Length: 333
Image: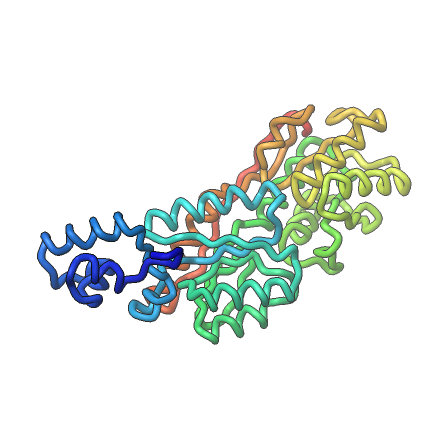
């Protein structure tokens, strides 16, 4: 074929049938004999023809693809979500396209526009901050969207969320039940608001209140979302106070950094200071002491997002779903 892509017409010429007959076979529409189907499939295999998803999408109003837009590629949380999305997509005969925004609004807009240009049937999005209006606009333009871990009400949008606030409550209540009374919070800096948003921060505050413990803004420390961010947050905590006896961290990456810094400073964990992370990534069991953490089943989260998106694609409406979390207690607390 002189280096060019094999077309549907090439297959039709090879077999001696019309291009429309080849199209019917490719799209499994019927209207042909089993013998004709076998000859066309053999020609497709021999010539290496690959149906053009965009062209098929124009005919069938769909490309059997969905987009997954995460915040980061390197954060261990997201690959397991992607695995769940991929497994569920494959069972539906769909292909997953993956991209990341690094929490950048312009990048999110660019990727969503690219998804729409590629004709994806819908998208699962971990939204960049302050982009809900952008997502509503994309949904109005015809892109079904499932937002993860945020609840947004709008046509052509649904949501899947783990019960993050309850997870934070479980972590802090566990620390309080261990007799800890000065429980610090290491919160991701760009997510830090006071008053807090109703998730980890709100769970932290409500658990302190139920446990009869005071709120001290001096031990609520914003940090960057990295191991070094956790180490830096712990150093700043120790510079301002030495009387903390427990830490609840925004996620496991931050918690592992704080854990490393405590051990470097000669602080015994959990004897002097206990610590609990969030997400329960595999690294929690690889550090010493092993890290207690709030578990989100990330594969189930991804699979559930696909289920909700499929309903949204098929019906134009899908009820938001919430998934439970659990506290996994290990040596750090």
